[in-house]
Image 1 (cartoon, rainbow over the protein chains, first blue to last red):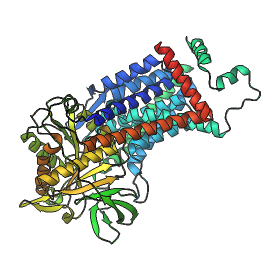
Image 2: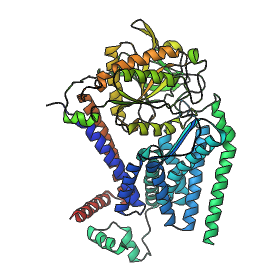
Image 3: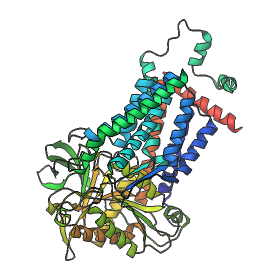
Length: 236
Length: 370
């Protein structure tokens, strides 16, 4: 019986399951239905293998990845159509703030020897998530600002390479499902959830006095039976 | 009214984009000069000297060092950096590493076939810092988007091809050499990984005096290689195990070629795969030809870890790799569970509430299945 590298195989399977599991929950939080969320995940994975070339030059390589670029673009677009104008403006402000923050980080960020460095992979989602949350205080704004902020930064990088003729490469969303754009979207929503819930809890939780019983019912965790009733009520 | 707002928003966005592009044109062109910012490396032409408790010099590197970073020396002594002051990093001996067991057999089991993904042995090579060059050979330490490091990568690729491996060598530029270089090269790495790779190497060079990497091995003037593992990535344990296996393999094939293993406070895109490795081949002060000879010797040791190319898939992974994978799984599951519980706790305000929510979710899942 040969020795089985079962650990490594399990690692591959479990880390993928967890990553996509968390992604599915995040999309679920964005008010996509379970099925739509799964479809989005499938599009992320399959689309990750498809790159659409963008016009470049002799020394400029540019492309747009379907999974890492177009899918989040569509998701954000869809979320934007499902919200109010004020929310749209907040999301737009978040996008611009995130892209600017990343750009400035590239120019000025230099870790001091004593300083703790945060990897850009985690820093940008953090920046996007926090900024978006502060401006929009919503998960959807956080998702849109983080993903589209990074995408905007890519677009600006592309424009600058083209305009100035600097050799280089811009593969928008080229990492597919593991691109910084997707990682940022997921982390930003998780962050917004944590900040939002913690803030409310620190405030002492939602006030109950003087509220209508119907509202209070919604504030408390529901029993499975109530939940089921609620699910039926929510179906449109 | 609504339309007006949308039009205004679109106009504003376009104006912003143009302004950003115009205003940053100068600054963005600047990285073509030598003044660039990079959080992973010293940019002041300086480097760190790592010394032990008795003041003995262990290693020198231009990599950014912080407290908690570790170094495994050529003779497998493991040190942890306890303090970084000025150009010095002070390290404490924390033990001797067991030499990684190399256990490559020619057995063709279902599992090894699954892991090695068919008979092909594919290897990916890319260069995050595509400007890195060698002063004695290239005349300068940095050539924008076309560094001497590409030639070192090419020698590595050709050597592996000669040995029968299928090699995917990306010479895509990720310049400028700044904080976002890994962000750009992440996409190259992810695309290479779609080729069913057995291993992925990001080839760099260090920036220290020549004697740190210069060596004479089997009558040849070479530069040594160093493996760098990022400790902020979730697959850290697996990557470290891979580095230790590589070191053990080269130590057997060409003793004296591996400088050591540096465990640094970053990710280096190693979260993408358990067998992704950053390799430093010499420094800018060494000649590129010496670096090319060094990297070729490193290539000759790879079959000991990845299995011989052409032969049926053969890598029987040693227990250590299973163990490190188990640890990685343990940490991932623990962290995710802790985060989920913390979230539910904050959400409901009590442990009972959190458990209630879990029961609730479980109940719903059962319902849906039934």
